Image 1: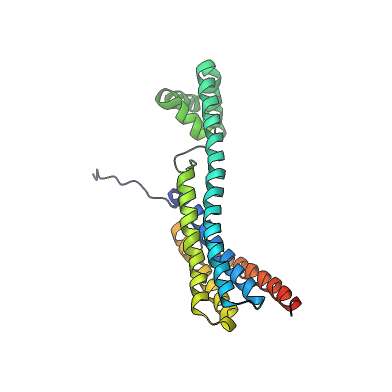
Image 2: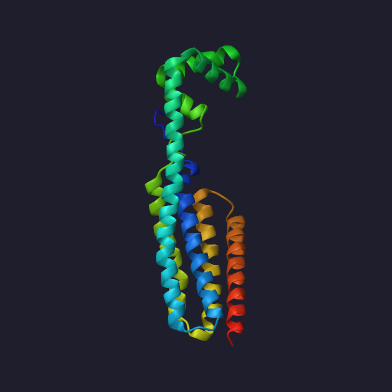
Length: 233
């Protein structure tokens, strides 16, 4: 008999940081590349293009960090409020809460008697944890972590934004739009592939999805930049 047991590792354990990281990197590439392409399409100087790119990188990284921290903190506050209310209800009306848990397990397919036994056992072991998981849907995997989300978004945004910016630095003014657009599309497809591998999703679907929307954003800003650039001639 093999007594060695190894817990399964599921891709959902990556959800917390993966969502923020992919969002940050994607936003960094798309927004900075779109900004550079838009400004370059207006026939401005190479220096202005680089200044715009650096400003977009810095502002975007701080904006992503602040936005993620605020939004995920709001989620954490809501979770804390729900847990506090659930704790109070367990103290004031334990019978109702036990029946509520039983009904949840019945709805999931357990026979009423078995559901009652399971509810009683789990309540005895960890009443609040059982209600948090099975009634509220709050688990360690999906638990809100504001600092983790903020740091992941800021760092990955900066890394993503640095890629098209470096391409712009190394390109001639006449080739900036083409070089940044092509390189950014490559970076986006690569990001889609890496995120799909980390999340156990379809590589082709992720790459096509992120590549399409990134191309659309860059094309739109390039068109706007060309219109404003032409109007200044």
